[in-house]
Length: 239
Image (tube, rainbow, N blue to C red; front, top):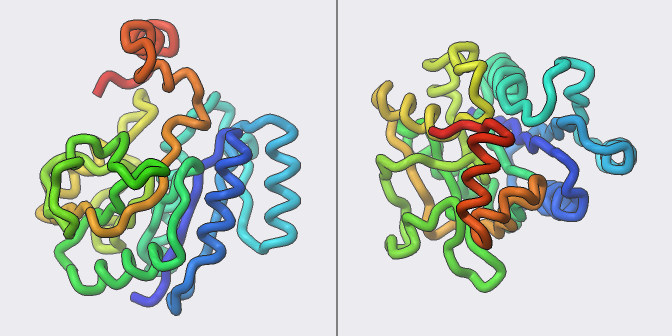
């Protein structure tokens, strides 16, 4: 295994997306990787800038409007397409979301960890804020030691490597089409199939939560309004 596929789903949040792109393309690694942005019905301004960046920097840009009529979020077709391509290329898959900034060594360390741990299904970097404190979605781990943790808790897709072995063991076509988010389910499936999930507390990435969907910031300022909006107005996943 000497290849990686890295993907970033994008729904506007242009400023952080550009930071994400820059950080990935500045990665220092000897591993050959392909980088794909999945543009999930962003505005015309964001779309045009992504097209300009792709032409200048050489990453692949996929417009989901050419693939599906479903409104955003479209994590399901992204996961299914990325899985098929990674399996075809015999590659691991790394998801780096559009509100995450990786260090130059992040990609290389994730890859090397996967090579040393063939029992891994998912390997994730812990998320930090700008002050270096563990933040959402890994607040449950804020008191963990700064080392690799074999965890039974769910891993987010903020910055996560999904091993080729797991990709071949679980078909993303089995994912529930009624859901919008799949990190909890895929984390559970990984362990159910006998893999281990690792959270790298010593490999932090910068996370600016929910910048692509500002309504989610209500979780921190007005939780009652947030959960009402989530379950009744936007009808998003409860689990």
